[in-house]
Length: 286
Image (cartoon, rainbow, N blue to C red; front, top):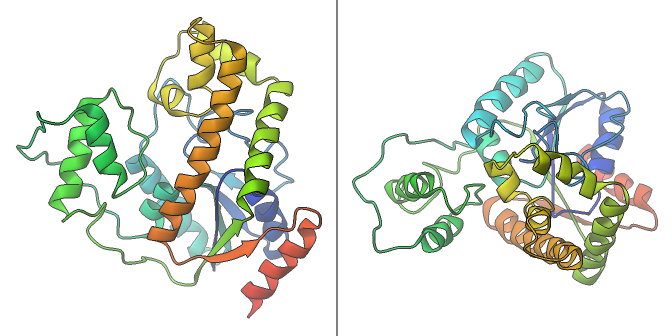
């Protein structure tokens, strides 16, 4: 059995994954694009205490060496196939829908560039076209990768892959959700908590090392604080931007997940999270 726990930032995916892992003696595969980086912890809400549960593809790469979706697919399938062969129950958890799509579905990469270079489109326009078909971590200034991605999509008839076939059996997609106002308040509060926990020091350490890679320029919480350290904006504006961008990202996550996957959604009871865990367990046992 493969259990996929997905949903917007701040809804309790990590807490649920740990509980289910204990119940089923399962191992966890990370599906958060930024939690693969060793140095990005506070700003990515990375699990601090794994409670003895084996986690795969978590903190495996330095932030100065960007990790691609292609690499994730290759590494993730290797881990997944090994665990399945060992008759292990696997839990995949994270908010990066594209990683989950690439891991579990017939998601193919086309390395051949077509002759189209899109001279009539700006980088932003190309990025917007890509996002109509898939979520992406490509930086807006990386035109070569943007063009290649859009060509791949065009070559596949406007879709992000050559088919939507699920490659594995017994896959259960568990989505966690809540009222939008509650979610947005949780996101805002969590940003304040990250700041209290030392987010500025974490990002300043990367900034002082002159690390300016794609993950830094993409990750919410890092790109905004880099602007602060560059004296482009105030700390108050940076924190407000982190909150705003996190809320917007959560909205995009909902849209992407609903368009790409067949998810069973659960309304989270934050006052009694154990009741939500029980609901999910009952669903899985049916």
